[in-house]
Amino acid sequence: MSRKSLAIKLAQAAALLAGIFWLISQARPPQLLVTLGEQQAVRTANPIAGVHTRFVDEVEEWKIKRGLEMAREMGAGWVVEFFPWAYYEGRQGARDFSGADRIVDHANRQGLKVIARLGFVPAWARPKTLPDGRPTTFTHLDPEHYADFAAFAAAFAAHFRGRITQIVIWNEPNLSGEWGMRPVDPAAYARMLQVVYPAIKQANPDAQVLAGALAPTLETDRNGALNDLVYLEEMYAALEDGRPKTADGLPSYVSRPFDGISMHSYGRNAPPDEAPAPDRINFRRTELLREVMLKHGDTSPVFITEAGWNDDPRWAFGVSPAQRIAYTLGAWDYARDHWDYARCVAMWVYKLPAPENSYRDHFQFITPGLEPLPIYEEAKRHLVDR
Image (cartoon, rainbow, N blue to C red; front, side, top):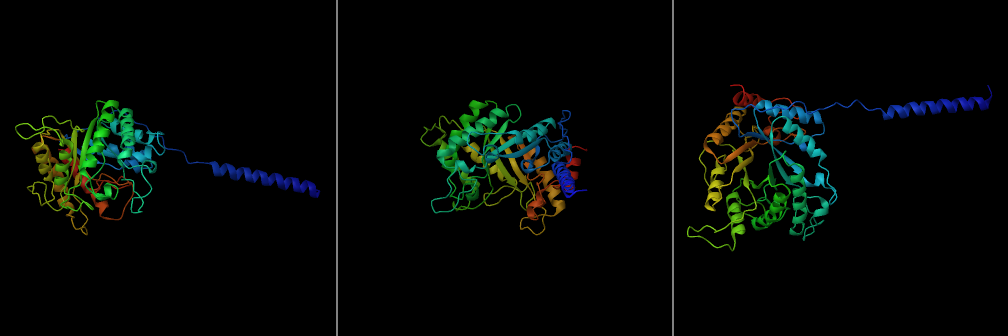
């Protein structure tokens, strides 16, 4: 064989091997087909029982479907999920809700009612730095961008009309970390609601807009955190400022930019029936917040979007696993029997996307790999199998 012929054959062999390697590189494992399945209904002894989920950061759709199936099977009829603005509008006006669709559609197919929490500001809707030179965070929203947030919230409400009926505006604005690392400002939050609320209602009149989601805290340093009772008082005062009063001292007309209040009701070390007190953080602190609402003539419903106990023995506010189970089940029962104004009590957190190797793992009902924890099994027995 001539050198030329040999060179040609070697070149052909090399090309063949290159082609084989290219085909191998393009090979992909078969994708698991995930369908919605048949319509389901929740069977539960407590219609206000719910869980706060974290499926927005779940990569695998089959885990979303199975995790929501397990929530239904546990007897939780409500799920609260975070839908970050930055995830769905990375560029102004370019919105894509497909990632949210798969969560909402699977939840609806399982018969679950979905409460959506909105927040998480994209980079284009906030300045790069604060006046002191620190970079801004995803919780920073200036008044000049309230209209941008309102436009997103309105588009979200319109897109999910008939699939989501409650929308929470922001999360724990009484904490500086949740208010852009700035001093907390109830009046500024009230102004945000006044911009966002009409936009949502125009886009979807059926949506219930929820304010609040205040963190239970006793702190009074506005550079860090503001007592939730004080914050709620000041929020109402900002909304009522300048309105004439009636004989009973209430504003003669209050156009509130919300249809209900979202609250967080963590129990810490206390049992669920421990009496509320202004200087205590416990599950029944909700009753003190309700008193603030009634003082201002507000009889709108309450949605507990975060609550619960933690069974990490190394955490300052941890309880034993047995106490956590008893307190959680007792809280659902207490709220059902005593809080006629509460529409749901959603426990934080149903499942984390991945282990965090911290006390936060001990709020879970199932593991990131969908293994039921003892509290899940006991909740199922309490809510369904009885």
